[in-house]
Amino acid sequence: MNKYNARMEDIAQKKINDHNEHERQNRRVADITTISSVLNWGTKCKKDGMVEWEKGHWAEAHASWFQADECLRKFKAPDKDVPENTLLLELHSAVLKNLAAACLKLDYLNDAVGFAEDALRIDVDDHKAWFRKACALEALGKLDEAEQCLTNIEECVVGRADRTRIMKAT
Image (cartoon, rainbow, N blue to C red; front, side):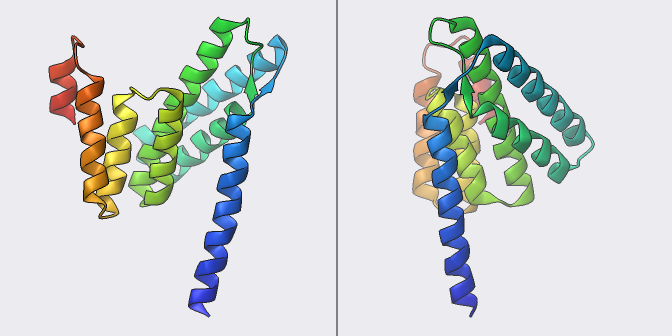
């Protein structure tokens, strides 16, 4: 029965992940009023999560950031509205990295990998997302994959003025 339950949970999680990925890949174009509302809600949830994080309330921070992700992943501005899309993607990336950190604290390691990967889909050169993914993979015992993430960080920071700081931190 335990194997059956585990299998059913895996199937259900895969369906949820597939649905979420479909939403991320197929963001709906929204008008400026909707984009403004989405940005405001996402920013509020991000700030609420930070308040909870600073108190050490990992689950509450996770819940706030998860709400932001749920909202932000669904929409984009028209292609001609580059500043709005940039703001949306930057906020979403920050929320996803925060979610990965909360998942690490809560020992939701597979989710941490997933959120870090989502952030990397937005910006493949995001050293913080690579580091969060490496930490989760290490905790899962996937040391070769974690090492590759650290190698990717080294490649991302070549030529950056803050390279030494980033390398020391990671």
